[in-house]
Image (cartoon, rainbow, N blue to C red; front, side, top):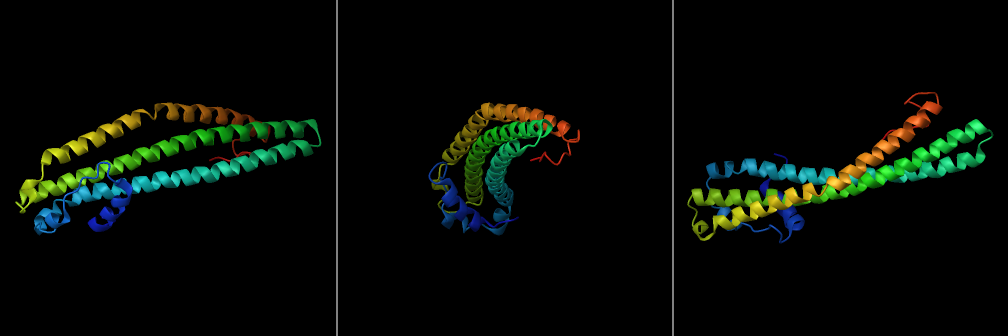
Length: 212
């Protein structure tokens, strides 16, 4: 395990808020026997994995932001090269470089929109993992007959999980438009990139072309 239960719950207190945030009192969980705590390890690991996915989604947004900044700089540089081009052949290469840079920027913008949407889904998935973890804590407490656990309604915790997972499914379905746009802009950029590469040494490894 990468994390222990306490740091996970502290993180989720900030990440989840009241939405799907119904918890089992820590006073009940603290009374669990050792063997019952072991049974919670799988849910805890799932929770750690969900946090890692949110972290990676956030990092992907940062990487795309940097790539977009570089792409805009390349577009500006290509425009300057066109103005400085000494002959027709150089101007043609510069124009292709401008088109490639513009297509790259459009693709990265579409990709970033998808990245942000994916991060939102992963954040909601994290809330679901939290809800499942709390459900597992309640089940363990009731199985061990911890005093006070009988007062908590398992149905409410099950409903919390079901509602959250349904919301995740709905949000993932809503990604279709952003996913399609990312694919369309990538394909358009690939065409411009191939044209530029062919004009400059007829190779995809052209020094004029930078892969993402």
